[in-house]
Length: 204
Image (cartoon, rainbow, N blue to C red):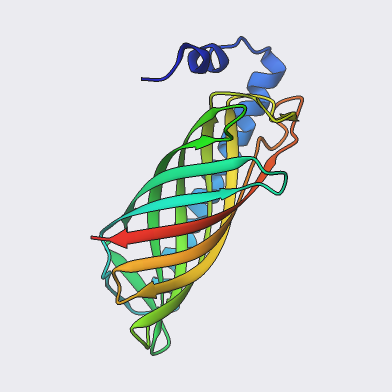
């Protein structure tokens, strides 16, 4: 169960200006996500790129790492992969997924994190060991707005990620992920947070 501190942060009163900025940030985020799926559809329909059934359905990941200043990170991630993937050339493909994650940030200023993000992956599947690139953006809710002196401004945050790695026999991934959290200036303080993560994934 979430702690009382979590609800205290999420329920802090906001003035109309901050609320309006927050709604603007949410609209920008959902516009970006919608554009992501429109581009995916455009490439498949207008450019006649071939779609085929995805070889992935569900996956689970463990992310472990830290920021440059030593603030630790551990997240568990569950992903649902869209049923179709887009072929690019003879061996490449784009596949999209939805991630939901829960984690703990920092061991000194313990902070609970819950997030959601769509992620697009390009992979080159010519061999049994396949390299990949990931790009994504999402929204996150934190139980603290101050982590090791970095003022994040509030519970509601946006995230962007980029990662790379290899997939073994379409069952196991190991990779690196850069993960950025900030509030897009919808709060007065926006120090942000940059994380460097090792990611282990199992496809099932």
